[in-house]
Image (tube, rainbow, N blue to C red):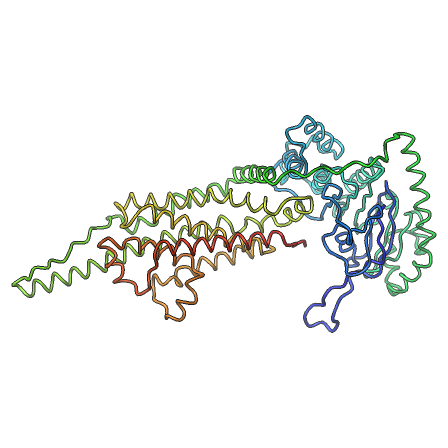
Length: 580
């Protein structure tokens, strides 16, 4: 049984508002018996979805309490992820996966069934009860609205939840699809006598299929009773007229009127529920036995599932595959265009005094020109490698979390570990970090005849700067609500790398000291150039830059700090709630 006792939700008012706070929910009180299907209806903005999120634990009420089977969900403990099913308004699956793959992955993330003999029968049962058997091999992107609603329900049934919350799963559907989904909800409510199914809907067309209807108006509960009494209570001929009727009185007046009659109407609901429960008991004596919720898989199991799913999506996204190949092969070619003639070795200036003074001066001048040309070429090639590697890193990670934010929110509610999620991203993106950085360094080194300095050191710094930018952009993606915002911020971040690195123009010392710690490109570029200190090119490089170069060890340390910072941002951003 689900009980709401004077539930209130108060939030800060928007800036510029005359009021200090907004009351989204006011003194909401109702009781829902087991084996019950309830509709929450009301005009737009009346608090329907807000109430559902409070029940689900997504949003915490500011006053009042919610109880499930006598357990206070705020004071004692939240529902186990296996006890709760939440179907949001939006699509909850990746477009490039099939229906069967989505359900299988959900089972792997939320149960320990994969690899057992119960896995296939459970999968087949979920497909059958939701009417998706014939669509099992169809990709999500080609499903209709009604089919996606069914899939959303299927994903929650993997744990056989006792409290199933649905947000607008029948909205926007044609009458036939709406009736089918509503009937499915009714079947799910009757299938498990301990289950409560609640559906938020704006439509009043199929209310007769529900056991009860709860009407919200301006954050207040104004009716909760059998659908057949809805017209009588509001003195209307048809349910569609209820919304217009609500506008004829203040919400407080409706609420006070309902409080006087609430006991009578809810008594009727419990009498009906008792009759249904008695009938169900005769059919199955074990119907009311408590069933333990599904045990969650361990972190490593979730990581493996997420990684397998992510690679499947990547392989099927041909646009992304070709883009990554184009960058992997094209960016190194772009670097070597500037060094097709190779890097000519620097000749040592003769220390012998020449009797021809003019010739000696010409020799020194030519040597200085050669130094400037060589230093500029080497410095430019290193920086171009670094900037292009950071650009690839930004492309890899900018949309990685924000692009599937809403799916992540639903899966966290179902028990997904944030640590498992971030670790799966690290392993997936790590492949691109290694491939792009190592190929960039080796290819450029081969074509140019060998850049001065230790190749291993330069490769290590390329890997670290790629990992640093990948981590920071992953952190930005985790903090942002939309992939568009994450992409823009990541592009800006990469765009500032070149001008603020000091590789092109020297910065004033007070600015250089302030910005250098945050410019990953500076550390990879500077550390790589410093690794040439035992070659003739180091003096040449120093001729073309006034920026203080740092040791490879210090550069590696700072880039590792960037990695840690970025992953911390990604973890905090992913763990925080960003529901719509």
